[in-house]
Every structure is written in structure tokens, then in C-alpha cells.
Length: 263
Ligand code: SF4
Ligand code: SF4
View 1 (cartoon, helix red, strand yellow):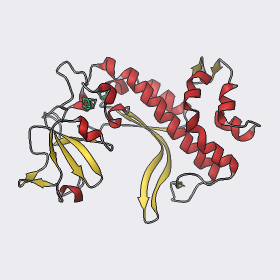
View 2: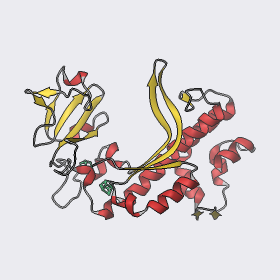
View 3: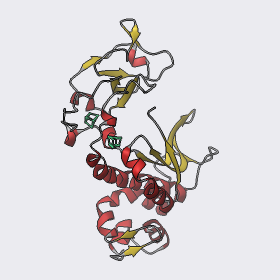
View 4: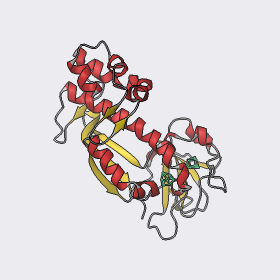
């Protein structure tokens, strides 16, 4: 709605549209009691619309499913949708995850699972939040965790160990949780000891917006228009709320994909 009103109306900025939203908005799928209050803290996410209306090229390379560049308005709308949905789903996740008393994202695979380890990719500076052994060698810096031929450490695959380990891969640091291990920051009562400072990846919901999907080719990195929503069925709140997630996907005009990641 904000996008349509800003691009077709006489507003100086998306924030002006948001400020003038009616207090009570009801659609087929949702009822917003304070849409302006919800959106105003996130006005910066609407910046791509300003570029599109000013005739500036999109800040990122965006192509359709055939690899063809999309027009500037489509690109701006997709960038805004991706960012707004990501922010909204992170907020929903923080409300839903804690009451589940579930630690599935913080432990290695159990004996019944076919995976030998789980990987928690870390952003710059986040490795220092984990006090565990580190592997940072010339060999590790040329590998990725999922390479067909695994990185060998002392003659064995890097994940054949009991305790979690930090590995410096080609693309950066990851925490590796081998089978039956626990994140070193997971307290015995299931709480995260560094909750306010937990890595970005630990804040992500098990419902992923893929309005845009990252890709890279010979022309460099870019985003492909996908317009889908991926929900991971291993998560208890995803299993419980499948109907609501389907409604959310429909309201956001996204194709819904349910998938198991851990088996
Ligand atoms: S840092 Fe916290 S939230 Fe992240 S895996 Fe470890 S215990 Fe879980
Ligand atoms: S599986 Fe879901 S409920 Fe369990 S820790 Fe992960 S996000 Fe939270």
C-alpha cells in the first residue's frame, strides 16, 4: 500500500505516506490497528522507492527467473518487500521461539539424523563470542564446509570430533556443531547465555522470505526474483502455525514452500 501510494501519489517521501495511513486498516487477510506506528521505525527500508521514483538505477542487480534484468520499479518493490518481510519475520520469531523451549537450532544432529554436523555461519567479529577450539589454516581457508571432499584435520574430516569447533572457511568463520554436541553458549536450562549479543543467524526465523534470492554468475553477484516464502518444518512453531503461515504468504503474494532441513 505504501509503495503504491508513494509511487502514484504526490508525497515527498515514503515516510509521509506512512504518517498519513489510517489508524485502523483491515484487509482480507489481516487487521492492522497501528500500521503507521509499526512502519515508522522502518522508513529507511523504503529508500529503494525513492531511487525508483527519481529515475536512479536500483542499488543492486536484480534479474527475473530467466536471468533478464527487471525494470527499476519492480526491482525497488522487491528490495523493499525483502527487507520489510525480513524485519517483520525476525520480530515474529523473537516472540515465538522462546516460548517453545526448543533448542534444535543450538545443538548438533542426534543419532537418528543423517547429517554429521550442523554449521552456524558467523558474520564478522561474531567468532569471538564462542570460546572453543579454532581451526584456521591455509587448507581451511580454501575450503567450504559442504565441499564434497571434506577438510581433513589430523587425517580425519573436520566434523569427526566431540566438541564444537570454530572453522575459518573460504567465506569466513562458522561454528561447527558435531553430532550430539551443544553450542558452548547454550546453558543447561536451555537459555542462550549471550542472548542480547547472539549472532545474526541465531535471530533469523525458521520462515525465510525469498522475494529475492542471492546468486552469482560471470557478471558478478546479484539477486533473482523468486517471490516465495520458505518455512522449515523442523521448527515446532512452524508446524503449529502452518495455516497462519499460509495466510501470511498469500497476503504477501508469495509462493509458500514447506521443507524439512534436518532429517
Ligand atoms: S549463540 Fe545462543 S542462540 Fe546461537 S546457537 Fe548458541 S545458544 Fe543458540
Ligand atoms: S527450531 Fe524453531 S523453536 Fe526451535 S530453536 Fe529453532 S527457531 Fe526456535
